[in-house]
Length: 286
Ligand SMILES: C=C(O[C@@H]1C=C(C(=O)O)C=C[C@H]1O)C(=O)O
Image 1 (tube, rainbow, N blue to C red):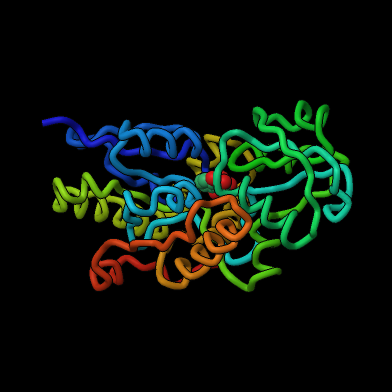
Image 2 (cartoon, rainbow, N blue to C red; image 1 turned 180 degrees about the vertical axis):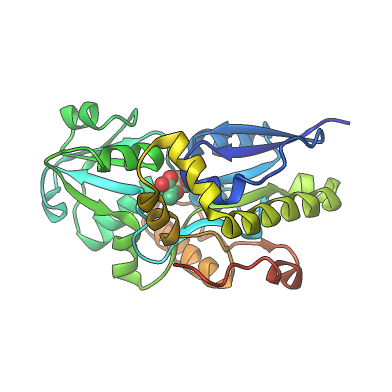
């Protein structure tokens, strides 16, 4: 029988969900990549499921379901999605903004923030996520994931805007950057297998919360920084995709549609037994 191919975001933000996943199961193959690559692979059928940009979920909402209890979300500052800017954000009209090619959600969230909330319409250029190179050709640069973490900790002269904070300040809603999407094809073929995958990740997430020290140690090994840094970073991220987070995401889809960024105001199909999921829900954060 062919293996199920499961994506893995190659950034540290996903560690609390992935660190305790048993990767030895021969039924599964885990494929690490940056979000935009995973988005393309799921759309092309190269992988069967995995965390992808929530924006990409919106583009393929008819073809995917999203697993309950698994996401990368925040209510306010996210800590690793930053616009670095030579000028205050409201002065970026007629400027060039460099966008990392690794993102889909944040790229479109930035357009919403700039165009809808600040009324500025810059031109955009997509680039490799390298701040000095981006700043050579642009007035501002968007970075996500480990590159955003890295550059935010370096000495630099730029204004820094956290996109989770900007979204929250303008909407009062949570933002979901990544969801765990499963192709409806796999769900129709083998719902039992999808249940197993769901449990595998919920169980790993529960262990990650219980043994956060081990997750933090893995993050320090992968990226450096202090224990205090990671404790604070992970405490801001929310991994519990539920109806409240769905409402924030659907508001993002509606705005993206209104601005012509998304072809339809997509709805989320949240998949997974609510009672079963309840056992794994992380209540205490902080
Ligand atoms: C919190 C983050 O969320 C990410 C942002 C994504 C995007 O912009 O498309 C996709 C997946 C998430 O890993 C991050 O990368 O820092």
